[in-house]
Image 1 (cartoon, rainbow over the protein chains, first blue to last red):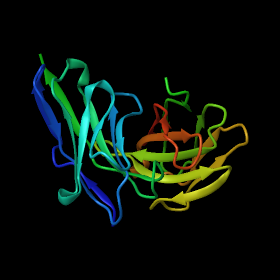
Image 2: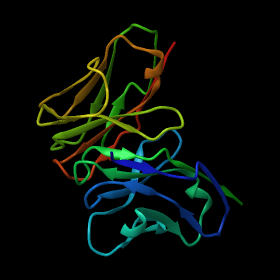
Image 3: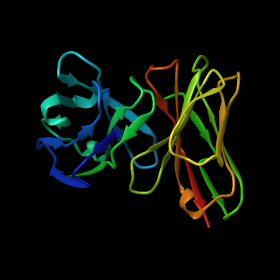
Length: 114
Length: 112
């Protein structure tokens, strides 16, 4: 069955430090992978996506993610975190291709210390 | 600003009641998906509507039903509410199947 695992429930980093959020997926075919961010009381905003091609994808707000098929991973990274990055981050896979029927992980809550 | 509006923002119901949640989107967004997000969890896919027809359903019982209207608005109806239905309900609209989805801010439903 298709699934997404985000091993870290909470992560705390200092402002200016680098960040890596982990995501592992289980999917039979070539996956369509996404990272979304959710601020309190708001919906989901797409940070970046991977459909095919270059395995290192760039997104908004200075985020990037690397698709590693051999490890079934799609980790999100940012070289220098800002206080405004504090939010909940969700990794997702498109179960019917593209953006259809997204299967989300349980999320990682990011706290940023000044 | 995603152009997706959900109403109401918050709602309190009791067990056994019925509820209707609404979603409106930009003109041309003929695809709408509904998700349930329980506290501390990721969103779970309920179903998708495309051109007013159901186009895929997640692991939710039939008491969860939906409608999509020609004016690109949609509804999520839940009958016989249970305590576990307490969650944030998100709708996401798109300009077509496989197109980028735009999420609303959700409706927070609390069941007492």
